[in-house]
Amino acid sequence: MNITAIYPGTFDPITNGHLDLIARSSKIHDKVIVAVATSRAKTPLFSLAERIELIEEVTKDFDKVSVIGFDNLLVDFAKEQNADVILRGLRAVSDFEFEFQMASMNRRLSPDLETVFLTPAEQYAFISSSMIREIARLGGDVSSFVPEMVQQKIIEKFNQR
Image 1 (cartoon, rainbow, N blue to C red):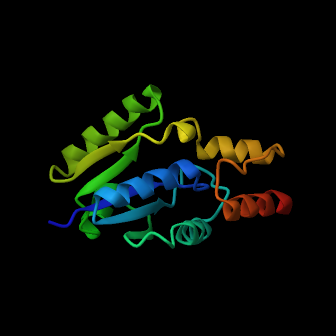
Image 2 (tube, rainbow, N blue to C red):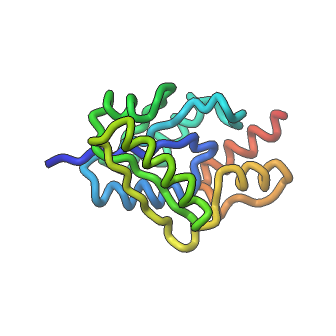
Image 3 (cartoon, rainbow, N blue to C red):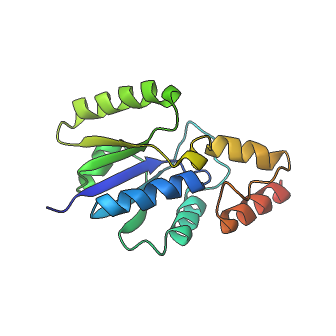
């Protein structure tokens, strides 16, 4: 039985923590779709096209991984992609309540779609995209939190502003 996992998020920017979950998920699932949300509620640093391009570049060595943008309800997108599992990361206990609520709603909307939680490796447990953006905006060094290519794109973005 082939299992397709969908890993949704805004990935603005993609971090080493995200990559850790993608790599580990690709070991236990036959296919992993990184589902990049347009995120109208947030004001992303990178456009949807830029985020997709960055993720494609930093995941190019993962055979089982594809990257697709989406702008609809996650459960509908998962059905369109024939996904079996929604992959979510839990960094801390504080993530659990929100993620549990989302998993419950998704199960209600699509009972056949399971949610699987992975915790990141310890060295990535505290990393978030919003923290990365704030550190970079203030001129801090984010090189240990994101791939080098992503760091360069972040620097370029803030230099343009």
